[in-house]
Length: 178
Image (cartoon, rainbow, N blue to C red):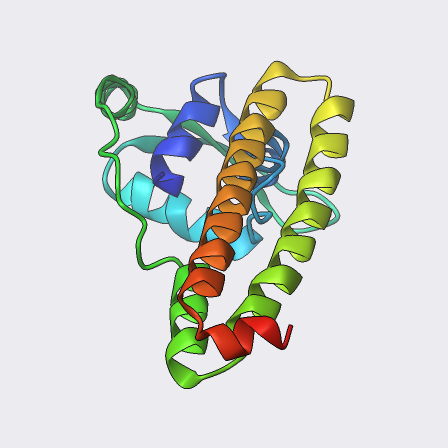
């Protein structure tokens, strides 16, 4: 997901300033890392340079200036184009968890213990996300958290399968000493 296109999507609701865009992003994607303000403003700068958004007002107050942005017609078209495109499914084989597991296996570490501890961490995370999802009132937030739940559930299945595979391939004397 491109932050630029997501911000265009937020601006489709109407003009907003950077703070509102950050807040809307963080509310829409509660399972994601909160955006940094610098990230929002750098992206807005690129969008303005590319004529996908324009400044409609700048308010001076007690704090920093607040610049309000709105979509241009080119920005609305870029958003429509992005929303019409399907996403390419990826194999995700280079995920950090997979890398760590394979490295542990090749380095002679106790891979079964690592997988057991990782499963526990995933279960804890899953419980927290389910609580957050169940408390969410906005349907978009619930949908975003459903996606996180599905990925954690898939990771848990993978962790169980990986552990079973490692246990099946360990030498018999190692299995008997568990």
